[in-house]
Length: 443
Image 1 (spheres, rainbow, N blue to C red):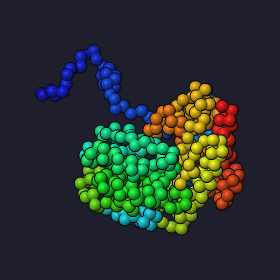
Image 2: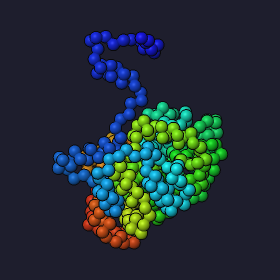
Image 3: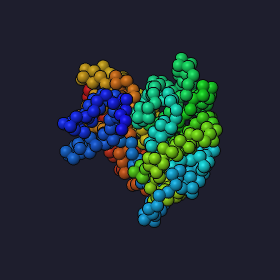
Image 4: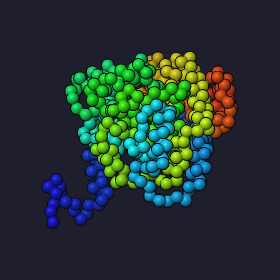
C-alpha cells in the first residue's frame, strides 16, 4: 500500500467526516455561493408568504409560455426513456443548425453542434476543456461567468465598462489589455443582447472588436441566448465578424420560455479543429451523458422554423420592446440614468445622480440600495455588485418580467409604449416602476 506524498496527516479514530469537511472548507478560497439570481427569487417568495406585495424585478425568467407546438411534442414523447447520443440527436442538431442559419445568417453545421442540459453547462464545459486561458469577463456580466471560470481552474479578469460605453467592452480596451499583458490564450465572454443590460453592440463597434480579437488571437465565447429576442429582430451574431474564433451558445430558456426544460446548444467552428470538440464530448460523456429524451424531441419542434414560430417570436419582441422603452423612459424622468434596451428583458439603471441623498440615508452600495428597496418599497432588484461591478457603483439589474405572458400574447401590442402599458396584464410592472420613482422622490 502506498501513501500519497501530499498527505500531511492521517485522520484519527475520533475525527468525523464532518470535521474534515469543516477543516477543508476553512482553507478553501474557491468556494462558490448560491447564485444571486436564484436567491432573490427565494427572498421574494418568502416576503410574499408574509403577506407583502412584492414586485419581482429580480429573477430573469421568461414570462411567456413555451411555444405550444413544442409542448404538444413533449407530451407525445413523455414515455421516451432511451439514452440518446452524447452530442445530441442528429435530427435536433440539424434543426438547430438550420434555425441559426435562417435567423442569424451564420454557418452553423450539425456536426459541430453540441446539445446539453442548458447553455450554462456548456459555458462551464468550454472553460474546463480549454488549456490554461485567461477568461476576460465584462463588468457588468451575468453572475455565473466568473464563478464558472474559478470552478474550471481558469484565471478570470474583469474588464470594467461604464454607462458611457453602454456597459460594453470597447475595442480599445481589449487591445490595451492584450498589449499590456502580452501573448497567451484568452477567452473573451460576450453576451448580447446582454444580461444584465439588455444592450447589444452597434455593427461597426462589433466589427472593430472582432478585428482586435482576431489580431491578438483571442477566442470569443458569444452567449447569444437572448438573440432571437432582439426587439427589432436585428440580432447580429459575433461569428459574422469572427467566424474562425467565435464559439456561440444559445438555448430554449429565453426565446422559447423553456428555462426549466434545460436545453442549451453550442456551435464549435470548424476552424478550431477537432481537439476542442472531442474534449467537450469527453466532458459531456463523463458528466451529463445526454439531455433527457422527451425534451430533445420537443426541441426538434421548437427549432423548426415555421410561420407560427416566427409570429410567436415577433409578438414577444413587440411586447418586450414596448415595456422596456416605457420603463427606461420613466426611470430617466425620475433621474435614474437608464439605456433603453435593445433586446431581452433587462435594464441596468444607474442611481449615481441620487448618491448624496442616498448616502444621507446610509445607502452607499448597490447591495444596500437593493436591500432597502426590497424592505421599504417591496421592489426586488439585483445589485450591480452581483454582476461584477464595484460595490460603491449604484447600479441595479431590473428584469421587467412580472406579468402574465400567456395573457399578453393573446393581445396585439400597440405601437405606442404608453398604450401598450395600459394592458391590464402589465399593472404590476407599472406599479413597480411608479413605486420606485415615488420612493426616490421621498428619499
